[in-house]
Length: 84
Image: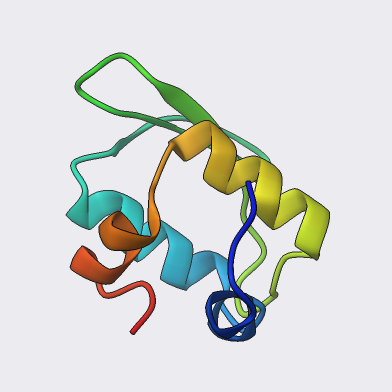
């Protein structure tokens, strides 16, 4: 996933709580919790595993992989108020 610099500047400061909040707004529900791993499921059948550490941000590669698994476009992230 290739994103513009202004989008990455916003994403690099997002915490696990921010990501989970946006997931819930988009209809994802918590399915299973195993330690720090939380698995969310979307009504379409997609699943994503989030490593939950409160107030921690994700590294660039992990965040890219999570966004690819979730399948959000820039417009989706704006709609969910995940970015401006």
